[in-house]
Length: 333
Image (tube, rainbow, N blue to C red; front, side, top):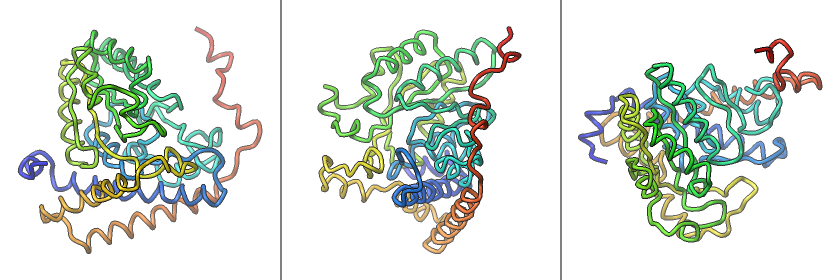
């Protein structure tokens, strides 16, 4: 990343805010992982440990009216869109204080009022949904953009290709991305596709593809900002490949013994929080004292959020059916 470009195109306040969200994302997910290991969370826990720069970077580049169709490693986007640590932890605990009010105990959450489309487990399913939202923006003449992505494994699914093709043909205001974290669960990329870079797939649809350092929040922000501007101007979709590494297993119950230890050590030195601190230090925007202060701040916020989530009640049986099915009046045309 050219530091002159960063200085010109990203303000000091934006860089500091993104650093804060990097630390908050890491802290929230570490707490969720701890609760899982204590047996407090039923179901899987999927984190973005080592990949936080992607969701923090792209979500910071969007406008409030834009929409995100996230996937399961986009915790930073939820936080930037106003989901509090307490809400998120309550969600994982299956409490009424979570966005789904106890109907789920995982990352399957969303809120259209905050521009977050609910996430489903089938990776790449969110991409046609984002294309549909973008089509609605086009039809209504709204200056809005949809943003959605999947992992490298998800790019081999049919819904990924259908979304890419439809969005490119219609020149929809949508940005697609791939979090290339080297493994589709336990399958390394070399056993999944015969190309070196996932971004090459964009060429098949006449869509520009760009490779980005997914551990550099500034690089993610700038690439996303450029793609968003193109989409908003009517130039159609862009595909961004964020290269990164999944530092935990596919989920927290996965020890990831299939990943070579030396590969993890190599990527450990590229940690997105470390890279952000190096950038802030170079720009003289922050120092060790400031980094410690932010660390203590997010720790207190997550502790308060955990306490709030613990105090939130579990839903009563009938509550779990509210909002699941349309009422008779809502179903009327």
